[in-house]
Length: 345
Image 1: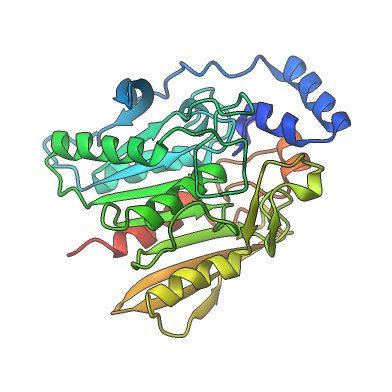
Image 2 (image 1 turned 180 degrees about the vertical axis):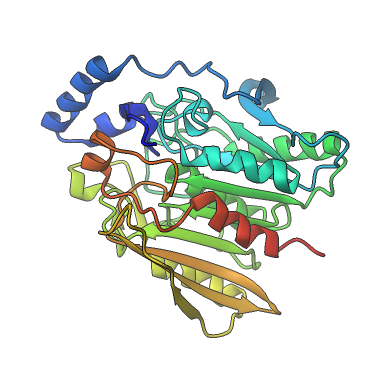
């Protein structure tokens, strides 16, 4: 069954979109918020999750956490889920009851024994929640040490769940995906693998040059108007003002990590199309190194700035503004397939 969409149900929040959009589009979204419903209450908690806080550099940071529901089963790994710019942990996980592809992580977590943790970003210079990723030319993303936040959450939960500290995976969308990439760049020994959805490597990086191989998955739409497939200025096609920075293209981003991994020549598999979204198709390109998949690029031909999902379907203004949502891939399943390969048997 399709769920109705409200402006805060997408990968990026309504406030973030309004600041990027041309005045006419921003006005339309503001009007839609009044018609469809009030803005999401950031304090709502998705069923099964607990809201907690952790102090980072003297600031309380909120997060949601969920342990696997199987009684007596030891957790297997930690998965950090990162919302997009302008969003929230609650929105990411469908706390408002609307479409949320990250909600598909819940049955995976119960089946595989995963601890799920979703932190909230602090408000940045543009007065909306944003993660501090590696874009050196993005002046609106704030100055919080979000990489330290992820580190501290992983340390705390690994200790609580009696897990090896390195069994930590990070997946995020858009700005959240770029923070996941920051973890791979700056803390390669602290993460097992990362996934960047509708995100890319920075063209002008404020972080050090990555030198250690980390398994990385990219999932990008070729018609993404915010995160351009071929690289360039973020949101340039939507009339966004300066401050969003520049990125490499999706293929160039994957190539960075393939080179570091000294990977073999890639192979590409076309995934079965979906009747639900006939105007988009998906293909998976994989690079292997040392007997394992080192890098994956899932190309969503015709896809926009939305996480693919077979079940959690956006609609209305989300697809009008952010582009087409693919239904041939379930984002969470595809990412977990990649993550699971990285765990020692």
